[in-house]
Length: 494
Image 1 (cartoon, rainbow, N blue to C red):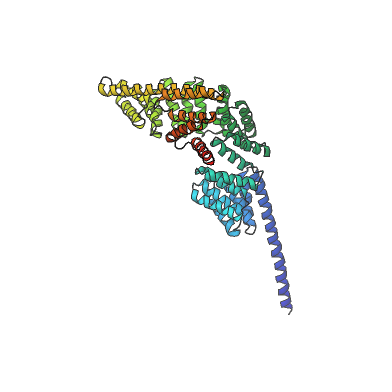
Image 2: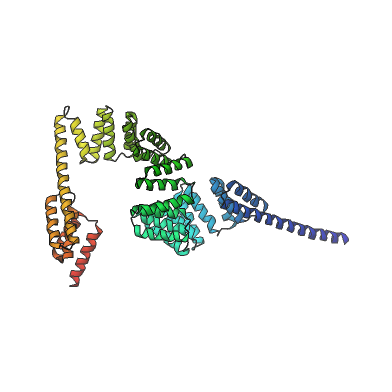
């Protein structure tokens, strides 16, 4: 009996000791996780990783430990390990929406758009009030071109969290991209009010101010963003672009040069540095920057065109041909690119290749005047009949353009008369503009304006007639359709 008693006492003692050990392990894990959170908050990624790994090793299988480890792995760029950690979180806590949201972000980073959308929707289903998942899904929808869905998601995120400035910045940027500048400015001002230290909100607001031609106000915002994030190359690039627009080329160059120092692999920084150096007539230095830019990121045809343009100033014919040739290759459907490449080839003595490029330009855009003129001149001796036909086409285009210019000038005068309330003068001038135009490209807009002026003058019969003519020429014009609908509704009411 005593042995049984002794054995029972040993079991109790072992249980007590084991429980105390497990409790101590869990406490150590909690402390490691807290340390990891603090280190990650200060962007000390390697230390955070070590702390989270220690928490995972020391404590029981807690979802919070694996989730912290996943976030640190994300910062470290260890995406495969991050996915493993997040999957472990979901095994331990299948309703943990933040981990599901992070899986969506990870898939988006890996280019798996369909998976990302599915995972972000799952996060929202797990927690319908999770504003961050709605914002992230909005970002994805906008990337895919569905601005309507994106805007709704951003608004829902803000409705769930009225101080969620990132969703406000995203909504403001979307509105600005659609030309809704007043709405964009309002929401971005709200975002800055929530967090005056949000550099993204300041930069987005400044870009809207640039579009509104309030350059000096924009410069204040861009400078504030640079002060908040002095090591962010993007902030210096944005400030540099604004300074260049304000004709402060020296200031712009300083900002672009700083961006280059901060981010030596940033093609945009080198491109803008080269562009400003060219404006300052420091063409040799500009060529150096532009060559680095296209080496780092050679998919923008405008960068190659700038390289060719500056090379022409330095007399580097090989670089001229390379620059305009690459631009044409990257944008094969552009008549302008083929025309410019043809010019470069002609200057380099490659006459036959130049002719081929100009023919391609005309094929893409039959009324491309510069290409018609260049081709007619170069064919004058070898193919005089074709040259003569090209010249005649060029002259007819010039004549049409002159008619268009004249009609537009008279039309502008008519709108000034309408603004002053002189309906008779405005109507007379618009009729004159239409007569001068004939079948020129300005004709649809002239009929539209005449119809609207007739309506504003009280002559709804003639107004309707002109607007119906305009609608035949501009079937997708919403203003014309709306006005005609109002006129028909009014007539039906009478």
